[in-house]
Length: 393
Image (cartoon, rainbow, N blue to C red; front, side):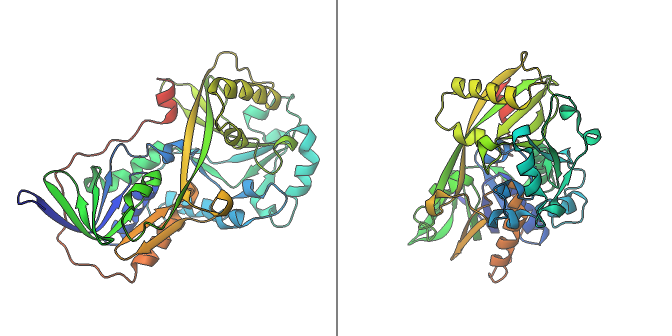
């Protein structure tokens, strides 16, 4: 540290302004910790806004006809989030906009009998409702729809509104900055914030998604490895009906053929954001070819919906996660703590509350110094634009 530098102290420094970093900032400050958050770009701009905003109960991981570790891990998450939205959870999300209180699963006619038998299993009965045609949402009211429709316990959040809600309560502790991690023989000794300021914390939490790999280099967490699971999502904008649903069919086997969420564009039109098997198989495809394939898929699944006056785009997404055997999708949030540092990945938006519980448990035995509250003279952070705003500006 040079003589000109100002050294600041706090209890917890969080790096990363996506859903996990903001969730942890709110949770830790609610618990009385002095915590600061640093984001180098804009809040929510990477994996958070690239997600579909689903708070799901894991049924999509059980489409093979049996429950899995992933489906059982997630099954209580919609209720945990609903409690927060009702102001009764660990984090107060009262008034948060929900894009849809209902999420659906629909099958094509060829798969109807198989899906019906599967969804009648005892393990899933309490988590799904079979709908009569009179109760179908308007997007499926056409007589051309001959499959089955089911309602799940899942909800879909407006992710920009979620990030804004998490930012607002503790905005004075959120800074735009790309800290450089300083360490001595693997132990983190501080953060270099800029040419004038350094920060020393009792604990450092890395919650920067794909950025974690660089942050933990040369620290005692450097043996923690990260994997990237790529996707190429498709976006369709137009005067479209809202659809929040998994499309399942014999073609896609045990995975959703397409996962639909619908998002408002600033110009008043609706954007379908399409994931599922479509996005996994789209990796490496030319965007033009993927869009043409998607048009054929939608024509087969939703032939009654007119897509002639629509705009199309794709988005490459790199989902950062802790490394798994065979590169599989993780079933749980991940938190690793060594010495005075911690690295975490929620692995799924819906699992953020579980991630928060794990972090609190690891901090419960830590020793903290009593510091005066630290406020820094650094720029504030804006909320990022969504992928559909960027694609269809």
